[in-house]
Image 1 (cartoon, one colour):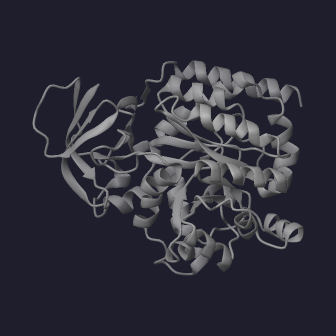
Image 2: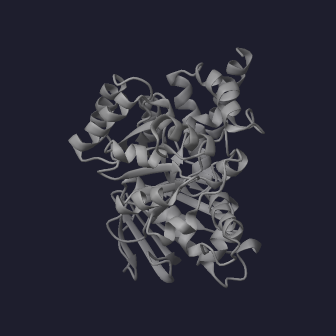
Length: 420
């Protein structure tokens, strides 16, 4: 499939805006800029709208869509134990498939072209994404005893290289849900395959205090002492980080994946993004799941990431829009290990088109700042993944009607609620 998008404003890798065309072929960006006419399967006139890389959601739990607006206004511990865990125990692989299909629709409307997911039934997750044409990276989420590491290794080997849209990264749920024996096994796998490791980390103050009580160290220091970060990786949330934690993230080249909407809604706190960024820590952005957000919307995420830093630092100059946008594009792609996030030849053709001819994007004093501070998912006109258009002008092209996907999701939610 060969598609050329002409007459576009282009968001370049350095976040400057130029004008020209984009050519995609065989799932990749073939050329950017001044492109001569040639035979294509489709030529799209952008009418001077913005063509840019898609956002990469660097931490989510896609199938948690069934919990949207069901577990609200509770602190994290009650949210998990009273609402989330009991309902999750009733999920089937078929549920995960259908609920992930719903998440994909929402990702597409938000200009998200890939997700870094941690949840149950990875086969169902992978099938939902490939059937939709969407790109996903699955993060291992093992818990409990060391025997869980065997399944983690099996999944790591069988998912990587299986489909160009799907990859798998080693991971565990969190320090507080894993035995030290399991963590040592995960560390051994990381060293065996020279592979990065990700997990939830330092999300709440009580989590950090609990780890210090158990091990005499913060989660970051403790996990690093086990060799888990020797091959890179990072943490999701990273809200309560000490200077020593930040130093480890910098020296090991780890990614701090921020989830400001979820952390604000659960009153977990505000991650010290500016401090980490100034220290040389690499940043990425994720939505977390719909149970704690409640939307899978990168525009909300970017806005909060920027403005909450200004409150935290008491400084209106803290973490400008350009840094946040970069984190949601190339930062997240790099954290996920995918060849996306930059509008340049050779990258995945994961591309979106932003409607600039709308009140919230006018006047065009700064397109980048408009995206972060006034942009909305209503501005997303088109979302392409791997050179295939999956969403355009309000219409989905994912192999199943949205109405059918909605019907299945509601049926799952009603069934589980009736069992509570």
